[in-house]
Image (cartoon, rainbow, N blue to C red):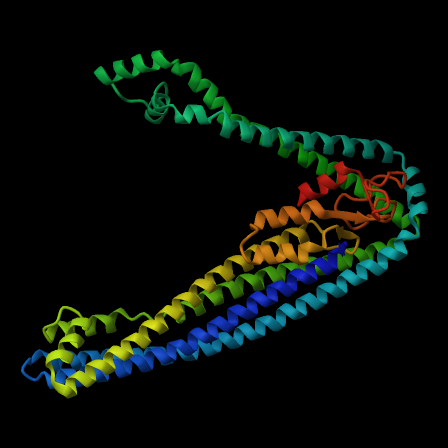
Length: 472
């Protein structure tokens, strides 16, 4: 089954909402864990103070126990301050979620406006074609734009091939130790400064492996992609200018056919969408920073408290806390043994709390990575206007099994995006006059263009679909 562009974006928005909701829930759990941690540390400090008081023969114990108590108090105050900040930030996150919903609704309304205006404009298709055909420069402009697009596409293919050649054909040079040695020393260039015996030996090695010719070939492999890319960029710029000239002619034809109000309405709706998308991107960045700040606030580690405990344990004559409690259970009498058992139980609870916190932080990191990847995919689809009502995706698994695979890490962001682009096409009529208005470089061919897959309800040559995907 196929899904239309707006439905596809709505499905991705829902997945993003689910991710954000899980992030918020994890942050709440971490906040509660932070409060428990403060209580545990208070109890730990109290038990250590009682143990130190029972070891009165060791004078440093009382002083060091006081340091632990002070550290626990400072941690309690610090966590209380963090709690207030976490609460304020949580409220900000809830406000952001409301804004996400508002943006989604406004965007969907603008896409609906595009759909309605386009339906009215499409009825003027034959008149638009006639009006454009009467423009003296139209045919020349159309052929020029088509030729430049083809040249730019061919140039991009050459760039890709040059990049592959640089990697594949350059590997033997990089793996040749003698060549790599001379290349790293800058032999044969102004960067080479060796002299005497070293220079003679390097010269002997260079002659042995034919370094001069190899270096020239290697330099060409490295330089060619950049040169071809500059040429391709220049052709793409020329093609864009040709398309702009063609756009101007077609806008005049639309207006001459009586479609000016629909065209202006379409342009207004698309400007609204662009404004929403800019605001949405800014909101996503702001939220990402806020989630990172929240994550930092929920880190319960306290080096100052740990140092105070370690100093107290050392002052009581034990190398570590486990040795201290173990000795008290064996030789400290019933009261000290009971305190030691309570401290062991408490330390076990603290360790469990820390393990839970680590798992939650790891899950947060994974969610943030998935969220950013999904936001980038959605942004790419929107940038190519593939969320337009005329856009369709021929694989409904993109919002089912493939989406699940991406969210679980079984499918990379690039692979998931490629699946979207591979499945994308345009509904019947988009290539007709008036059908492609408002889409970037669509609707050029007349209605006689044959469907690429008869009966699929989608039109356009494979080359045109490939070009639309490449533009994304």
